[in-house]
Length: 207
Length: 207
DNA sequence: GTTGTTGTTAATAGAGCTATTAAATACAAA
DNA sequence: TTTGTATTTAATAGCTCTATTAACAACAAC
Image (cartoon, rainbow over the protein chains, first blue to last red):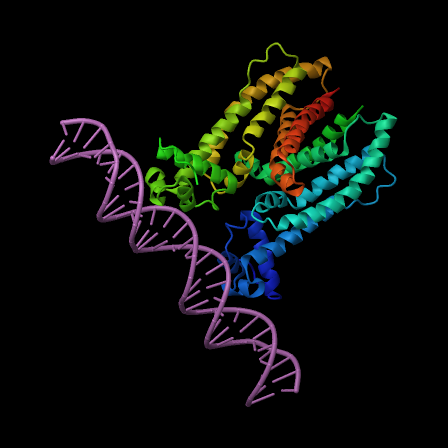
């Protein structure tokens, strides 16, 4: 039961819905349950969002954009060496996942239920990464020619980074149940894997 | 609509249920739908398995055991160098995932709904990997001391391999929709990532 | 105070799902 | 052929969920 924040019921519904959708997915979350946790009538959920699908999509698109925006938004790293830039990118990516650990599962699970959403995704994913990757790729090619980095395609590099980082958070819920971890242990483990991933990638790129 | 294989209705139900559960998960698959696809009365599903939960668990445990058995079952690799063994392990793991591409998602998604199943998982995962990892770890330590491999813990190594391989298949459904791939392209991509993963890991392990 | 708008609720229609039951059918054994 | 058991079906109880509707409350504007 949420503490009614008294300000804006619509926002409260969005907040509770987000939490529940992330926790249990679309099908296993009912508007009845959302209303109960918000502390309002179930019809109110439909008053503001008409359908459950609408409510979900509102949240999904919001989270989705936020997630990918963070993912591909590069702060200025002009001064850094290529290795340090990579380190920075891997760590940033890792941190975005840490802040949104449930988003990847949400996307993986719910996208199959949402064929229309694919178009939004496609649009987002075509433009953003292309420009980032183009920039990164140029530098990568330079480093390869200079002999500082072994030959690897930008796509393989990015895919591997993404894989290593994402898996950590996809598997975390299982790990937590499997070998009960307290918060400190969990934190340590995450911290460790973060640096391990940086290490793993950079070591692999040596010529 | 399945072609009634006429032999064993129970097996038919299991087969269809497996396909649907893997495709859409527990909640979004109904016994009504299973029956319709099998071509039998819905009550028959309950006659054989009493509850949908029962049916699901039967399949889940079967798939689960099969999956992890394959994962940790090492053929004799006595002759091979450590590098070749690793290559073999990574490729075997990759192939098991290729044959069961939906199992990881199933486990990730449905385990949260099934707290009791955790115990089975824990039991399975405590014993099997320990002995495999022990063996592998010994060899790893030898190689590290010999200076053939950089210092890395067996857990980090295994986790990284698992991450790289699993991500491929978790992300495949999205990739397929995102950039429509025909079968050949998909096959090429998978094949490429398989060798890339081997490469990525082995390169990273250099001292 | 009346009116109009917005927010909120109770009630409920309508649909789908799981599980059960009682009856029908198939079929092997006696 | 009869009998008993296993398989299969139709029907339905009971539940939960989504979405709608009509009524009610709050409150600002006039």
